[in-house]
Image (tube, rainbow, N blue to C red):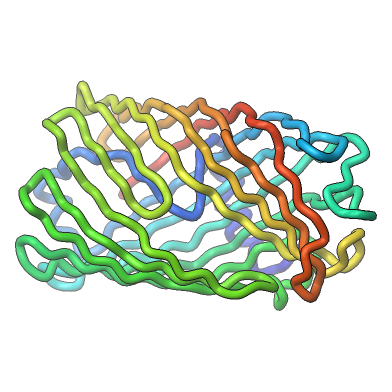
Length: 310
């Protein structure tokens, strides 16, 4: 295992709960903090968990696949005056793939992937330009690979810029543009919408990036939600498998529902259940040429998560 991910592995193992973490973060609506917290110059948050994707058969080839994912993350948020804040987020995710049967997504590739890691460092700057306009700017560096792959060949990076306009205290619209490099492929650049609509004091509709969430908070301790999102992942393969130094891509569209319980102002516990309604796997060789691809059948997802705020 690369030495650079060891500290984040410790962070991950400290949270043996289950939760979802994709490319986009979909935080649940938060209660208003007490006045003492609003004045703090630094806020700190820890999140951790895992998610189980149940076994699914491949469409065009023999075999099936299931996945456990475990992650840990921290947010360090610094107030930069009255109208700006900077958030630094290190996080790590570990995926444990179980491929069964004589799977052959690509010719000669019978064991496409094993255990993987994804290590990310992200920075986000938010500026409240005035009472209506909010500007956001961020960037990330990421390493994602099988444990025995060359770390230097597992690097990608990207960033985004976005702006939103509050038409009222409960309704804001915006747009952003995200750019991200990819392993053995051209970078992708895509726009994304922003919507924050507090329908009333209990209902909230939020769309950010490649997904959205509708939540209902009947009591300050409880929130029910339903959401849908796209989860793209890619991993550098090691040099000893049937696709040496190649790339495996795992793209999913997930629909789920869940509940969040806040026993105190600083702790959140979340459970989810849902389905992956689309799941595509693609294998590239070390030069970026496609060796094969296949879809997996829709399957069940289960998760729980924990968050601590300081």
